[in-house]
Image (cartoon, rainbow, N blue to C red; front, side):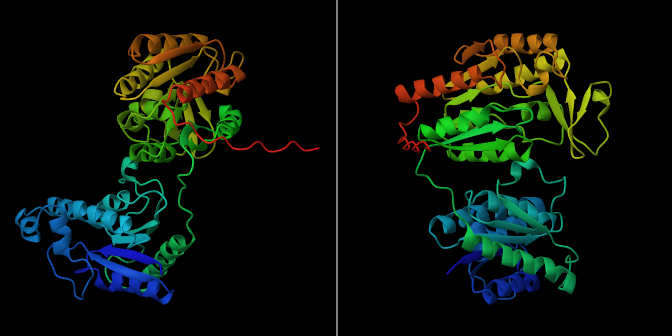
Length: 419
C-alpha cells in the first residue's frame, strides 16, 4: 500500500485536511496524518500530534506559545515537522507528502518538503503557490504546487477541485515514481540549450561510455537550484559546472536566480568540480518585466517572451569573475577551471552577434588574477563549443579516475556497430 503524509494545522484546517485524506483513501491509498498546529488541539485524532512535532524540534508547545510570536512558533513546528517527515520516509513509512496552508503553512511546508529526497513526491496546496515571495533557494527540486483557490476559509466546490487534484496527484506520483538509481556514479552538468551551448551533445555519451550517469541541468534559476540541491545531498561524484550564469544573475539582482549559494554546494561537500564560463557575459531577466534602470543602455537579446538577456560591460564581467573565484576559493575538493579563450557561448564567437573581444579579455584576465592558487587552471586556445574543450574536459575526468579522485566506474559494453 502507498502511504501519503497529510500535514497541516488540524485545529483550523480540519475539514480541508480531512477531505484530502478522504480522497486519498477513496483512491486506494493510505494516510498518515501530522498536526503542526500551535494554539489549538486537533478536532480529531491524528497519527502524529503537535506535541510530538514540537518535541522533535527540541521544544514544546508550551514554549512555542510562550514565545508570543507566531513566526517563531511556526519555525519550531517547521523544524520538527521536517525532522519527523525525513525519519518517516527513511523508515519506509511514507511514500509521499502533501502539506496544506496559507503563507504560514507554506513557510513550514517548504522546510518539510526540503527534508524529503529527490524522487519522493511532495505536493503543497497553498494560497500563495507560485508567488514571488517564495525564494528559489527554498524550493525543493521536484516540488509540486497548486493554488488553494477559494479555500481560505471552509470547503466549497471551487477549493475541492484543487484539493482533490492535489490528493490524486501525490498518490498517483507515489505509485508511478521511478526513484533515481544509484547503480552508477552520477555527474551533474549545467548548460543551456544547444543554440548557445553544445558541449553536452558530445560529453554526455562520452561520459556514459566511461560508466557514468550524466544529468544536465538547465541553468535558468530553478535548474541551478535543483543542481545545488542534489550537490548538497552528495548525489554527484563530480560536477561539470560549465554554465555559471546564475552567479551573475544573482549578483546583479535578477529574479532568475538560483540563490546566493549557487556554485557552493559541491565545494562544501568536497565534490570534484570542473568549471567553465558558459554565458559568462549575459544576465538573464524576466522578459515581460521592465528592464532595470542599470541595464537600460545595455545591449539586449530577447530570447523569447519569458526571457531576455542583457550583455554585460567589461567592468561587470570582472565583477562576475571575482564572484565565481570567491565561491571556488571555498571548495574543499579539487577544482579545475577551463578558460576557453575564444568565447563562452555560440553568440560571442569571433564574428558572432555578441562578440566582444575586449570584454572577453577583461573577464579572462580577472579570472586569472582572482582564482586562488589551489584551483587548477587550463587556458585553452579554443571556444567552449569546440572539440578541444570536450577533450580537455575528458582528459581531466580520466586523470581523476586514474588517480582515484573519481570512482572507477564500471564501463558499459559498447553497442555493436550496425552492418
